[in-house]
Image (tube, rainbow, N blue to C red; front, side, top):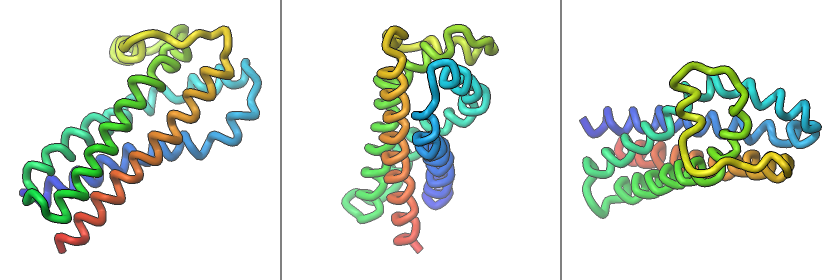
Length: 164
């Protein structure tokens, strides 16, 4: 059972890392866009990334579950703990930095009820008057999230390799 949970955590966290890394790889090109282009491009993310974004809380939950199945103090346990802390960091950055900008980017976007509700959830909304500052926070937040999710993924892979 532990192996199945470990593999599930690794796969789910890999998806979370892939989505954040995809955003991070777009950084150089998106920083060249003017306001109109940037606002237009931002709208393409929300249908697909909303579905894939479920991998972040799910990956966090499964990674926490894995902690309870591993022997305390073992190398695998410590690696899973680092993976868990990194995924908690991914979630914290999302809610504290990314989501306020998402509320701005999606406020006039036609979405289904679930997407509309989700993207208007959370404290505050970014101020459009300095759209470049909002853009920078959103873009850099994805780089930070990519690093954290990648750390989590690597720790889970290494822990899985140690088990074999």
